[in-house]
Image (cartoon, rainbow, N blue to C red; front, side, top):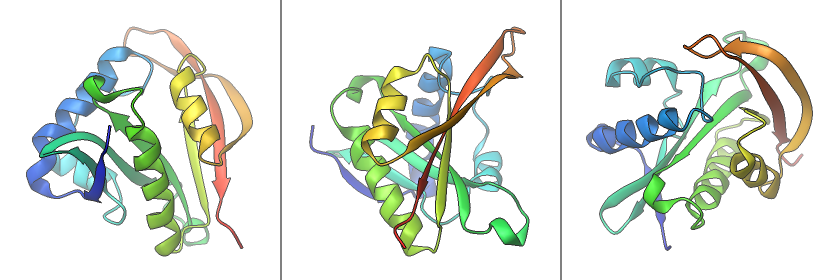
Length: 162
């Protein structure tokens, strides 16, 4: 699938939210029980490097950064989120999005990107590895799903080139 990446605009929100909801429904993408509204999304995700992937006119994926910490010493560290529509999974959209997010983050001065991925999400682990992330550890029973199930998270990171 040929996908082009562009900045996320508020007008893409309905498609972004639908893709986010699909990820939540898998049970292996996030601890979030439901999608936020636009204001919640806008508050949570950094304004720089919010991207969408389009196939034709359709939004088929999105990627964005959240701050690792609000402390000034960590201003160059962020956590990545990458979501691909179920209709576009396994077709290279995630790789195009994550590589664009990496390039954008480096242009914006970020030096470390991290991802927290459920160990069961083999596709996301493989994607991040293919884009230069390495496993730095696994946090066991770090969070609970809305149904009370404890989940482990594999921590991956990517450092910007010096």
